[in-house]
Length: 79
Image 1 (cartoon, rainbow, N blue to C red):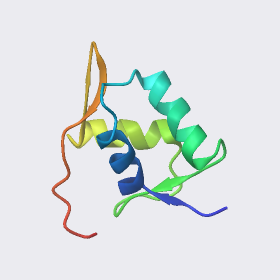
Image 2 (image 1 turned 45 degrees about the horizontal axis):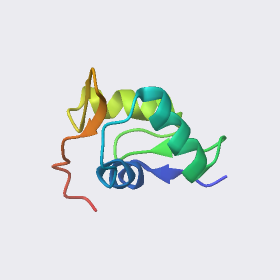
Image 3 (image 1 turned 45 degrees about the vertical axis):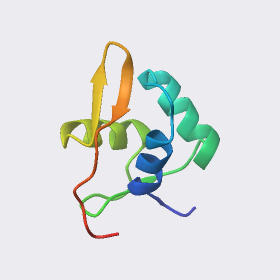
């Protein structure tokens, strides 16, 4: 199984017109990339979808509000 780069997930979230609940986001990731997909970033490997979302929230790339999870931005210039 090929690992999905986290930037693909950020791009998917950025294209959403509205915030998604965490459950809806995880379901969208599963539909887009497969239920068994694993994810990686420049600093982490073999992440589950939930671990990736949590990492992005922790790093400020995503924000979780009452309305759901929204894209904030990415300052990474590695891609």
